[in-house]
Image 1 (cartoon, helix red, strand yellow):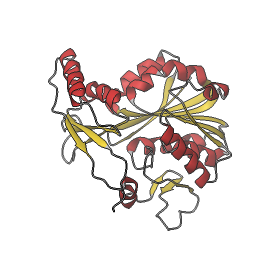
Image 2 (cartoon, helix red, strand yellow):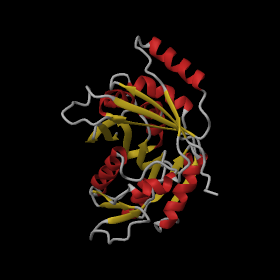
Image 3 (cartoon, helix red, strand yellow):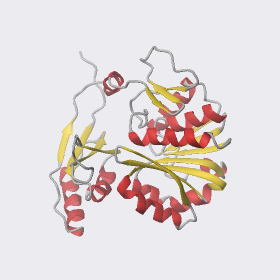
Image 4 (cartoon, rainbow, N blue to C red):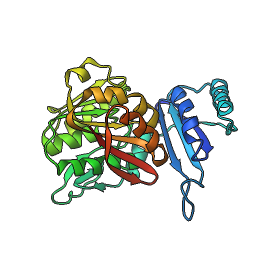
Length: 299
């Protein structure tokens, strides 16, 4: 009898770049994970090509409720709702499938590889073993790479000792910070499964003593409050949650502290920065990869 893996359902829309944030808000309500990517952009500007918005759920989606929400959001913004595709993904081991397509990645001084890779890391690099699987963040996505490049840049400016990785997924950023500075790191995620993966990855990389992984909706877990103020905060989530958490970020950031924000499109930078500037935080540096932005901000 073939092995049975957990059901995963995929929601998908094909949208323009301008309408992407509108429908992203709907998918956040119905999916456990949301991602977006552009079609083949050869010879086409980012603003002219189609974008694919995908959501993933372990429960069968309610098509009627989702279509209704999409239609209401479209009507409120004076646009047409795109057709919704819902697909039950094949009964395969998605962890194994991802491993096959996950080559080692170099981002600054960081070298990220899966457990299947048997080579020797480049000299002078911090090697991090992360398997693509049930938690977001294996280094291949532009947002994670942008955060690693930002960390590489910040590391050249001096030591950081209290680090928060909000929405940590696999824990790759927190583990990277622990390796660079031997810093105390708190990693949080709203998904208990991701927190378990993060803790396991920290142990596999020899950083279990420095990395604490907890379940938290934003900054609500008391462990997060107890650990403040932080001199470095990672927040690789999505644009709208970044805006919503701006006051909490300002309240948890130490004087002279820096925050690395990611998970936003380049076109969403103005919105994200406007919300953080209200909290007295300004842009220090930005990294742009494949239409995605990573922002380093501070007081």
